[in-house]
Length: 530
Length: 102
Image (tube, rainbow over all chains, first blue to last red; front, top):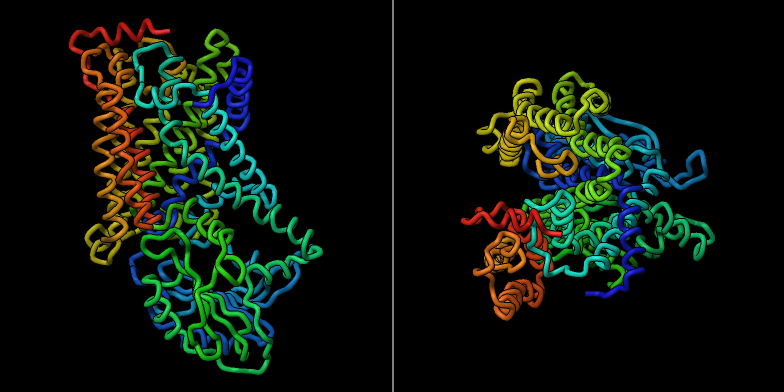
């Protein structure tokens, strides 16, 4: 391994420890919500009781889009975005480029939402920031994603904050690699019966060593997404496009073509989607139509990576004829290494490149990252064992955040399941989280022993997990297991079973820890072992 | 063969070898007070190289998705096998040995 002298190692240990202890709690929140957000789509469908398994783009969309375009004022018919929404419904945003109140480029238009049968369920006028947001049936998944992406801090500060946290994770991973002299020798070593410092150190370093490559990948890609729009785009626009973000976007992502403003009917969208499915093996995730209703219209169909690949696919079609033109690189007009790197950032971060298997592995890796973050902070406290009294508040805070945050997320899910049928899930999903957060903090203040606090929080989390499938069935009137499986939604019973098993395990762990035989030993470090 | 099956096959082979490496890890066994069962360094190196071969196969076949699945899966298998509670030493010296560890 890389050999550092004593002073350098000491400095690296300080960098590793302080970077973790200063931003570790926020990093833990981002990583935990990111772990849950890997399955955001599945959790959203589970909670909302979705039963359709056929993509909106595998159903006829052409007639629906033509009907909507006739009802749309001409001023908004310049461009159209099509995407899936809700229970495989169709979202259609007719818009034109505009500037917002602060002079920033945006899109203004009309957003239509259709259900899977093609019935119009809502129409909203406004800018893209105003029309897109959580809806009653996707409030839970939106909440999870929003917490992970920007911790609910207004943009751009939320994105900058999570970007800095990503860099902190990167710094911790690099410094951890440098300070660990026996990386491979210690890769299986876990001295559970050693001193609390030794046990915590081993738990932290074993999980950290195995997940090290993914700590780099997830931290780098996460920072990339956070800084891309907040720093990257404005800086490049300033340097190369005199601050014109629109021109930058056109140059990097646009389809340079001779302008032809003559009116022309749009090509057959059903033919385009069928051709795109045939070429990629996957239904589109997003379709963008530029210059809608003009002779120079262009349709871009975006897809998940093909089987065996990591790079998402984009196909370009002639808008007027619907004829296939070419596969479109992620960046620019020709394939490039930079374009490929930029393209694989998303799949590498979200783990959505090979269906449920890749999501399951990324979920496990996310959990490992949570474990590394939490045990790292624990280790920092345990190492300063002689100052236990002074650091008691930090140990308590670690327990409250470490075990309390999962409770808050579970409470948000429970609040969603209860209030979704009433139509107030957007408000109460956040409300449930905040009420649970207040309760957990109050519990942390009231319960004196850290051990008892850990036990209480684990037991509470377990009980809420066991209650979630019941709430889904009886409060949210969700589908039963046989109905879900028959509709091609096996994830619904799988999530139910996962919740029940995990809940039972947590309740059992809390119960066992409460028995007198387990009350010996030191208090610090016990929370991790339990 | 689909990406998922290729990745699962590669992962299954590597997982077996990782578990064998974990079982025979000298430092882990020393911590448990079972010095006799430790694997020789040369054998460990060969097993580690063999565990990497399925991933190399995925990479050389050009299946980048299978390679990433294999890599992520191996990380999880390694972590789980290291943290899996091991059987207690018959003599019970392991606990004593590690309790006195520096």
